[in-house]
Amino acid sequence: MDLFRNSRVVNIGPETIPPVFWLLAFLSLVPLCVVLPLAPIKVGVAIILGWTALLWVAIGFARDQFHWFALTWVAIYPYCYYFLSYPAERSIFTVDRAFIVLLLIQMFVVSRHAVTIPLPRDVWISGYLWGLYLLICILSIGGHNPSEVLPSYRLLVDGMLMPAIFGLYAMRYFPLLENFQKLHVSFCILGIGLCISGLIELTTGTDILPWNGADPAFTDTHVRRADGPFELPVILSVVAILVFFLIVYLRRLMPRRISAWRALLHRIGAIASLAAALIPLDRGLIVALVPIAIVDSFSRNRLLSRRIWATLFGIILLGAVTALMLNPRLFDDRVARPDNVYQRLAQDRETLQVVREYPLFGVGFNLYHDFTSRDPRYLSRLKGIESMNFPHNAMMTVLSEEGIVGLLFYVSAQAFLIRAMWRIREAYPPGWLVFLYCVLIYVIIGIDYATVYYSDVNMIYIFALGVLYQLQTKMLDQAKQLA
Image (spheres, rainbow, N blue to C red):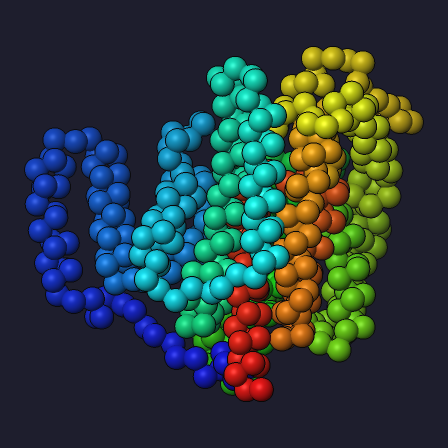
């Protein structure tokens, strides 16, 4: 696309910052010189880091360069959960929350005078429906003791509200035209980091970035199922494959010839993100990739060539055959044994029992496990396999916890967003296909595992959809100008 190949890339670095900002920065260090000698070492280091971050935030706002924080967040956000959350248990401060607060300031204060992307009616309807869904979630836990449902409120804000705000920023405010190549670099860095952390966990069997309250996942043969910097292996698979799609797609918008370092970074980032998606040995990912590969192979605007798809599934098949020959127990655990299927079917039967008793508004947001654990009559069995007391399915989770009303708003909000993208698909068909692939990954894997509330998945997923929608809108505007 000429619109993106000819876009001007602006380098913002220390040399472009006026001397007055450096003067203010150095003057602001004077109070630190008084406080730091009196503080413990850890507190002093934290003060320095925090003060430095505040300075750069202020400079970013002053120069209208807030998008650099978004680009940085994309590249490093998974590691912030481990290193920059305080306190470690039930964190009050997280990078995501601080970032969203700054994002709101950027959108409602600074960007009021900037040119924003107009949103069509379908997108606004999607937003209103999502707001109604959040209202249903709040009402579903409103009658409980606040101290008992505090984790639910936190999950509601982190996993459902903040991603929507981030998606709005990506659609309307993020200066994508000037920064899509930088975004490509950020996604490559993210993919490489996920691959490295996953490989270390797979080969050493240790959890290098453990989550509070999360147990490492192993197969029956004690092979470590890597989760990288995330809580669960499935999250690593979902995030990594989304990153892979974005890396490949953004490269298509660049000029055919790019610098050697950027071409190398692209290849490493794409391969690393795809490897990171496969490392957790998640079967749901393979199931989700099958329809995507079929659609892509028969499309006139393929994201990947048929040879690449054939090679990918050949590698997966070779890995399965190798496991069958060298480690039959591993093959049985991850491929052949039907116990997990029976357990999920038993769980669906249990969930439907709960839905029959609480059909309209469910048992309360994030309260399913507590509700069913207290009443053994909901326990279900299939071929000797018991249910888990967790819905383990995104749609079933919403249906059981927010009822039919909540599910209606939840599905409708996403349907209107998809329809908005469908209506502008002809502007650049590959953009529509990547959008569809991201949705299919999220939905199909969500059927296998309930990823509906996880903020680390939802933040990057909604941001990706927002970026794809803005790109499509830009291309549509270009087509109208040329017509």
